[in-house]
Image: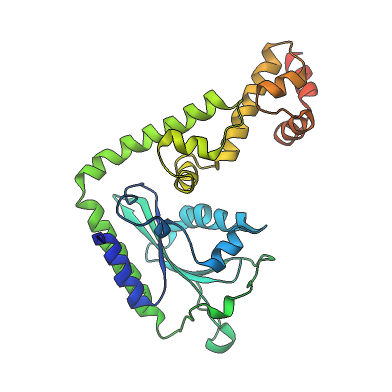
Length: 282
């Protein structure tokens, strides 16, 4: 059975002629929407995200858009680094950014319809307009006000839905804290193991894809970044407080390859583990 929010999203998609994706910063929609609603699942987007410049997508969607959302509460039309256009609408609940709606990807032909339509233009990357971009839905200047309004109406509907869910409002903060504590505990206690995202997902009782997004949303960094930070922090403690060989410290902290340990440590601290130890132990 289709949930009321999925029905609302499908209705908006039909009216706009564009697919709609939701970034759920409160983690309250997972049981109400299908998994594909939480990521840009279109093949052309996945091709860019899994390519060598996919990190640009993540930084743009989960970083810049959210940090700047207070500046455009009525939404904006943006073009990403791959040349795709999309409408974006932040949703604020009690003054806090709670959801972000994305409608797209689409193609806007500035040469034919005129420049100056976008509110934000991301600098192009080498992933600019990959194969298949010509088949994207076209944005038309005269249709844009109507499409913007449809997305704003969906944002208002989502805000009302959340406001009418007192159990979610009371429970999501505690669940958020609990899950973040679980993430931190698992990484801290198992950093020396060959820990994987799937292992963390199992500890949280969720799928790997959901876990990937949850970690970044709750902790502000990726799973691999958090794991490496925990390993390097443990290595620093052992360098300061033990006489173990540097290579042994690397193994004990999850770096079985000495050259890899040295490379990661140097990248984080600006010097080799041995030199860092000598400097900090006097």
